[in-house]
Amino acid sequence: MTQDERLIAMQDWLTQSSKITLAEICQRFDISRDSARRDLVKLTQLPGVQRIRGGAISAPVMSGPIAYSQKEISQDKIEIARTAAQLIEENDALLLDSGTTLTALANQISLPVTVVTNAVDCLGVLSLNPEVELHFLGGQFNQFHRAMLGTEALEQLKQYHFSKAFIGVCALSKLGVSTTSSEEAAMKRAMLDRAQQVICLCDSSKFDKQQMFKVCDFDCIDILVTNQRPPKAIQQQLDLNDIQLIVTQPDSER
Image: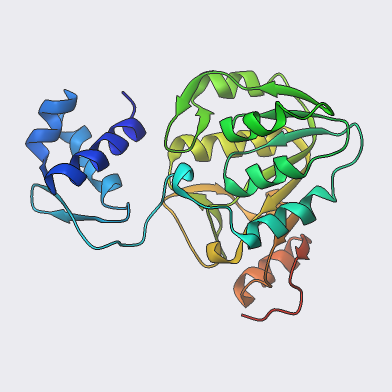
């Protein structure tokens, strides 16, 4: 069982018992105390979980990552997806990352293109599109991210080259793009290396946020599509790295 799978199981466990201890985690999942401590650190980053001495308890909702299956596709994300879809050209070779905004983008594709994705939600949408030649990265399914991650998926990705990669953003600060998972960060970095043009999709709720695992600096990005103008510190990095900014609500101010 992977760490993400254990985290999902522990969330269900907390819903039923309201408290779990380090010893109980070790026993239930047959893992070492060090692994259990690392799980607790990740678990307490999730909403509704609070760290206590020797374990964790359920608590009022706190900030933290939410599984993609629990997220709604907001109108802002739909508008970002519609705008990003205008960048797609006939016969493009596209790489689609996972996430709700990328699922919205998959729904907007209408031209004959080839798409490779590791996201099961994009797979479900694009499998119904007769215009798309669809390829899916295999390997280990990550339930939290609803995507194929890990060594096998990374190795398969090396077989492809893309005209455009559309990458979802979990957090964007003046230090670059970051995410909550080392496996997801590794996949996103590999995706950046396979494409001639990297297009990041980022709604404004991700601005000035920073997660534990670094994905990339700004110099890896060609285009940023978002719903609002970014804060000054991020805008400065966009300008310094000659990144094209596309805003769906250009008159909005932060």
